[in-house]
Length: 88
Image 1: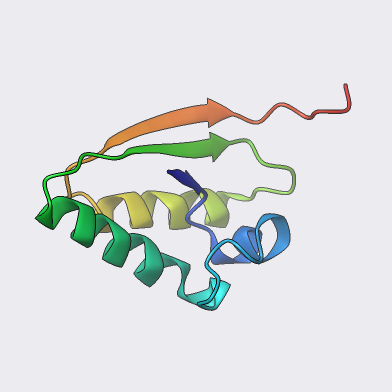
Image 2: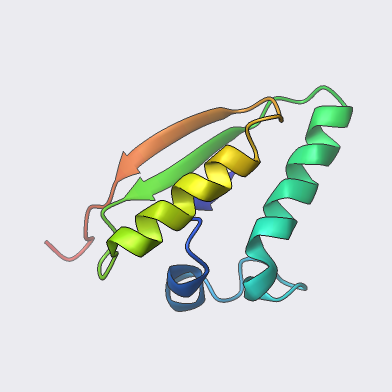
């Protein structure tokens, strides 16, 4: 499952439709609800988090860390991935 970022600001920029049909502003709630459902049926998802997104600030990183703390009670495997631009 591509978590990608916990920053709602960056989510609006890089993945505005990812939470559809929900609003991207509700990204944290969408992620937590999905993990809750998977937890209940004993499914363990692998989540990818992209590190070093273009324009990422300290606040964006802190927001991602906060989301990861929030979802800690749910079983999952979190895998960080370094951002690599496709055009280089």
